[in-house]
Image (tube, rainbow, N blue to C red; front, side, top):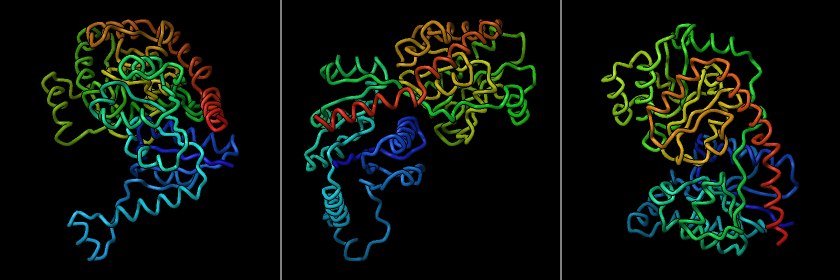
Length: 390
């Protein structure tokens, strides 16, 4: 039987590798097709991938090298790298690979190297144009296009971007929305979780809590979240209101740029950057509204996780695929970068607990119906099986 080579650009604890890891767990339990995993780079989830299938690293880090190899490397001969790729080639050719499944568009160099396997490629695209141009690079994406026969996109806006900006044929694209595993649905009560979080963060019990999540930076709109906190604080005074950012940096030079704004707006007590947390769902569970201030985010899983906790979502139009989830029954979509309007919608939700609960319940049900892994992963498996048989 032909096997599958699954590629991840790395094993970081971020959206694309996490959704990929969850899918591979499901795939192993629901398919008898043999497979192995190639990580372009390693990361903290590397051991989790290794529990599922054999793992190789494309950009291997060489720690122990004898003095001859070190001298040759300094002369530009890069012996260790060449030996590694030679051994990797031999290993993969022996694996009888019949299909390459590449997760994200950043794997152009890797896919190009793997062309010696002479098998079809599926590229699972989690990226929009800014990432394609300025992070992955157009030269890299040209290699992805050159070798890819089928694409899976995480939202319609990602699909449309491939068609409009990169001339990918529509018939090659399958839109399959992002998903979260069933275990993401938490059983503990809202009051228990909220009490625990408020005690941890020294937040008054009667306070309202707005959550956001992601790496800190321009694309995720960290600066916009701070502006949003200021705007909401000026519009809403019924109860104390706090703003929590889960994930990313909460110290260091680049973070200092954001904290500079927090201090100048006198929001030091209300805005809390919590960094990476092992229990992010607890914070989503404890909040009242989930804000998504991203400038570009193809289909953020954190929104599904917050929705699974019964929270309404407020996001920008033209900023990614989550508006395709929110629609008109799970929160509000406001004009791009309109902080004042986003703040107004959040205040409306805070002032109307019934509306907040209704939209949150719709969001929770939509996750269960459309975005549980058991509903979505079989669609990916179908694309894989069709590609293997073609």
